[in-house]
Amino acid sequence: MIVCGDDGLAHRLAAELRGVYGEQVTLVVPPSVRRVRQPVVGRARAASAALLDRVSAAVNRTGAGGAEPAANEQVVEATEVTEAVLTEVGADRAAALALVYDDDETNIRAALTARRLNPRLRLVLRLYNRRLGQHIEELLDQTAAVASGTGPGTAGLDASTTVLSDADTAAPALAATALVGTSKVVQTEGLVLRAVERQPPRPGEVADPGLCTLALLSATSNDPAGADGSEGSGEQGPRLLPDEAAVAAATGRGTVVLEQVSYSGPSLSSGRGGVPPFASLFSRRLRWSLAGLVGCVLALAVALMFVTGEHPLYATYVTLLDLFGINDPAYHKSTERQVLQLLSGLVGLLLLPVLLAAVLEALGTFRSASALRKPPRGLGGHVVLLGLGKIGTRVLTRLRELHIPVVCVESDPEARGMATARRLRVPVVLGDVTQEGVLEAAKIHRAHALLALTSADTTNLEASLYARSVRPDLRVVLRLYDDDFATAVYRTLRAAHPFALTRSRSVSHLAAPAFAGAMMGRQILGAIPVERRVLLFAEVEVSGHPQLEGRTVGEAFRA
Image (cartoon, rainbow, N blue to C red; front, side, top):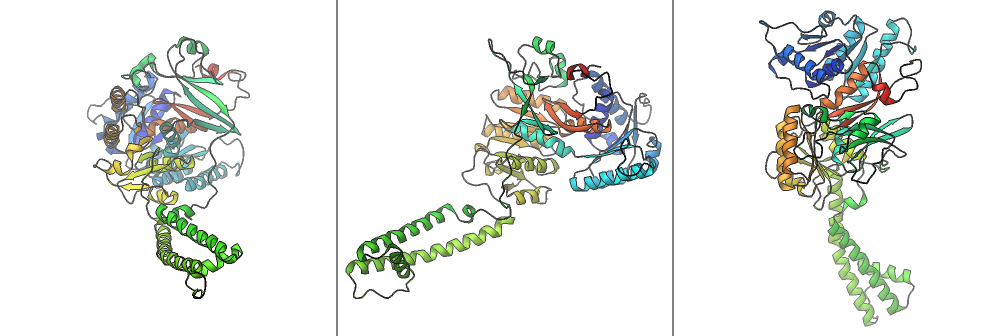
């Protein structure tokens, strides 16, 4: 296995392949990584953590006097992935190659070169552009089929191309963590399954086991000073796919169970997103003014009907003529009729400024439809999303698909997600989240949850601490990369605010299992986070494999 990348996802992916699948991995990183301390990956397997420590040591060691890497771990430094570099790391005889650079163009260029060197190489690409990814996937698969002489569409060809996005993989988990009652869903073949977290049953209660128990939560999950599934929890940490005996023996520990549902979520609105609804064209005060004028006209028409005895439609018609000043003066009519005509003229004078205001407001609404919206005054129960980068944009889209009200905070007016926010008509507050007044403008004191998804751990932490000072019971989800830092932050926040939900998530940690499964040639269905670990759902063909046929998931999970 060859992994090429320039950030933490490459290191987490390499550790996943070694520790979970026992594969021999060559890691290709740029020379600048040598001067950057790589964080420790929080995996439950001690062997995986030890392997990653050795990877970090191999990358960070100086050239003089450094020991050679172990047999199953090779680190190669290269500025870019050229044909010479791929030949040096053995791409012509490798089983799979993962290109997880942060730049789409770099990954595509390297994938085209690798496919030419080895048509039977299994490729896994990290691309943010989903439409481009579909075309690249089809192109590379067709190239592999033609080069192998099997022809396009031939079944049984081991070479395949899988395009994944770390943002798409992590977005559902991040969005679900911030919401109450939103399940973590995996869907396949028309079957919808969801993972539900259950608290330990009280004395005399029997917990609903669901279809099966996916995981045991860490023993410290209910302890304010406990860690959120950190590596230091040891045997007290989360356990994936436990058997029935382990579940029965784990008293006082929460569980994650699997349930089947028949409804996957709310349907999207059928309205056209580009046209503002009628209610949003006019302000509330103007709508009340128009309603009052309509009521006055109806009252005058009814009064005229009683005074003159005319038909209601005719009385309304005469009232409108008086209203617009195009009726003859009532010189020789009764006093009541003259009074009604004067009142109708007065209402007509009041109608002109109201109509002018309505026209101006409607024009202003259409003009600002493509501009950034501001949070409404009475907004409450919404989600405050910090950061509209790659991850924030995907999470924003997922939240709006669930019709969850969102207010975004972004300091860069040219950020990637600004266009998405305009298209979805989501309120955006422009400003540095660390500056005073920015979170207040996002109505943080009335928000339901805070999603801190910027690329800087310290910025996410500072915003979360300030939000907690304003709203102690606020639900907070932080994007934190370093496991040691995340554990310390989590323990402190839970100790300071024991009755508020705090969760820390790493995007590369959520995405690495999906990339590793794709490198093994498995069809990935979804990934469900269990504290700071990830449970991966993949489609595996078991027919013809006596070690898998007729066995339960727990039995198949054993080594």
